Image (cartoon, rainbow, N blue to C red):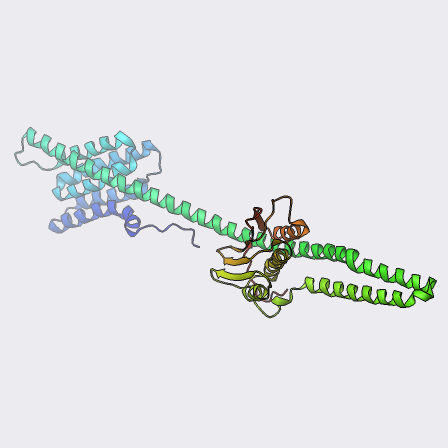
Length: 392
């Protein structure tokens, strides 16, 4: 983005106006009649203007500049009335150089020079006063308009500069937000790995390890009592099959199979369609987009856990699942018409696991339930898009 504030063409040409108000009448005056004195004073006025016309200089220097210009203006107007045009330029300079009421004093002095210095042709004092007042009035009105335009232009320039500064800050914030999102994703992955390790540890401890312990116990008992070996072997076989089933279930939980060859909406549709018992339906709103595998896996796991709980506990007759793609988040809403429960007293480990999955992606999980009126679960997570080359 270009930080420079674009200046309108008329503003860029504004510094040249005082010179034009002097050069043009000088050209016409010298063409009509060659007068070296007029040429000399005109050139002196141009040099004076080029050297001293600086609105940023000290007030005393600016006042001295205007006084010098008025002296030369008096000579030029007396020599040729066409130089009255130069007075218009000095009117504008007075408002540009002098503050407040002092600018009107400069206008009045310029008007007095224009009226008194020009050649008189039998004009009375009253005529001169009227000419002076008309000149002051017109010059003041023009100066007020000129000042208003310049001030408005300056305010607009400051506003544009402020907008550009704000835009730059917003761009920087957007970059920071992208970096934070990347860090969040990295943290989510690390937290996910740690969470899966903890889950696997609990699963192994509570299921597979207990099954293996039972197998060892049965084997040792068979050695101590060979007569019960047949029954012990049968028990060992049952424990082994149960442990194998638990191992497969735990391994499958590490990587959601429905997402291997389908998007999130399709995986949810299949999950809802395969439900037994209650009538379930899926609604997808917004524009679907490919999300990061962590996001899709989290939402799918939440849906699996919620639908499992509904099947086991809710005795629902209807289940509605809604997947909503919003601007920067994805929301999954699951509502059933089942038995419900009192929040804080029901739900067990399943709700805790769902909340942990969602919060580790900086999302939110809301649960609303009333006994006899069903349960509503809403999971909202950031819509982190699938980056090029990103895999699960």
